[in-house]
Image (cartoon, rainbow, N blue to C red):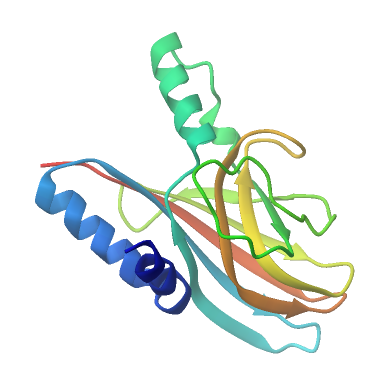
Length: 179
């Protein structure tokens, strides 16, 4: 089953989200899912809309921070989860991830935070300009410009980037209530 889900994540990312949402609604449980979309802006003016490139649940570190905040009256500043980073490793994402495996080394980009299409979707959009040539295969959303807690790490098919190219990342965190 895990191999099938991994195949779906790579070949049809939105399918895993729809299956997870359907199961959550059917079983009456709460579901938290992150979705990553990307558009590539080439320095020559070309634009490539990659659509949804990653769907995965949030990290254990983020869940622990959420539970701690609920217990202690709001210690965590959830509006700090706006720092986008990217890297070049394609090791499969896991709930235990706390960092990107191989960050590209550029400074993290601050995303604009807005509500998504519905009131239960958090959305952060950031456009990063690359200063070197990379094949970008991983993205992470953090709560600090360096270090910090990783909310979600997404791994996707490589996007080859040259110096001066940009990727616009759109991260959406959807919380589906049960019942």
